[in-house]
Length: 154
Image 1: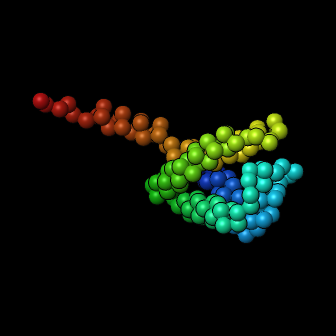
Image 2 (image 1 turned 90 degrees about the vertical axis):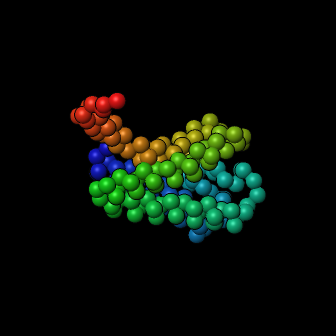
Image 3 (image 1 turned 30 degrees about the horizontal axis):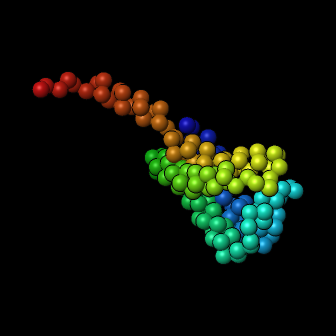
């Protein structure tokens, strides 16, 4: 993956974390009542309002977004390592989050179901792309280093 593409993926991922995190951390009742916006309502149909839980989700997303933004400003090997680390964090968060939502689609219309699955899965997919960044290049490097190594005597 090229550095500009990596930074773009990091920026998109950070934006998603900031959107969810900022809204739920600083306006939890509004988040509960009307997330994700644009006429869709996905949170309030899932149970009673819990300000503490919603703020916790917000600050978790803000923390992930902050680490993602930090990774976007690094260069070289540090950028690659940070991108992978951030990718792992997003995948670890996103997979159980998606699993929950896939089991709790009652009360949602078909458009909401599709939009929610795409929305919730997006951070996991982005995280996976960041986590697996540069795998082909590493495989090529390993292949070159083993093919140029002198034969082992045994």
